[in-house]
Image (cartoon, rainbow, N blue to C red):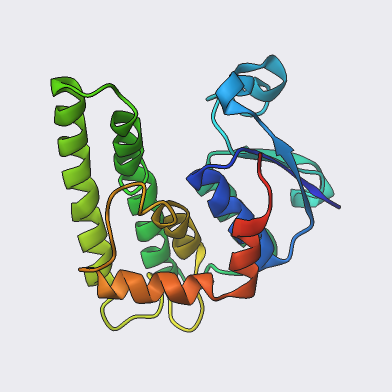
Length: 210
């Protein structure tokens, strides 16, 4: 059965397209044009009550019954549970995956998202203040990630990536837009190249989401 993937071409959408490709799950993209406020339509609100993309409809959910899931972190967790992939079974090994998934959801997403917002504002004191504040925090978060990746191939696991890598990669994909070059982030640069070299990950970034 095919998962309906309701999304748009955003970092949060790319997290899920990468995961779906890496997990080999059949899916159909249902574009939700956020530039035209389609995320506020009642039909979307019915299963994504926060009016945010992405969201999924899985006709083959738990107990072979349909299920809907909203919020990208929850979707990644659900897909990992569904497939038994990219999430360790051992609780101790799961903890760092959940830590870094929550790190992305709570910081490495909201902060660069604000950078995007203020870069689009008219020049002036308000734009400068907002950009400087959130750009500084975004650079700090990239530094946290670089230190974490020292001597590691992946953020939270050994041998293969986890859903935490997929979540973080969705936003690192926009590093140029964040105005954060990788010149002083060698570990992030190596991890990014390693992830993008994976054929399934590459397909996740190539698929049309809008």
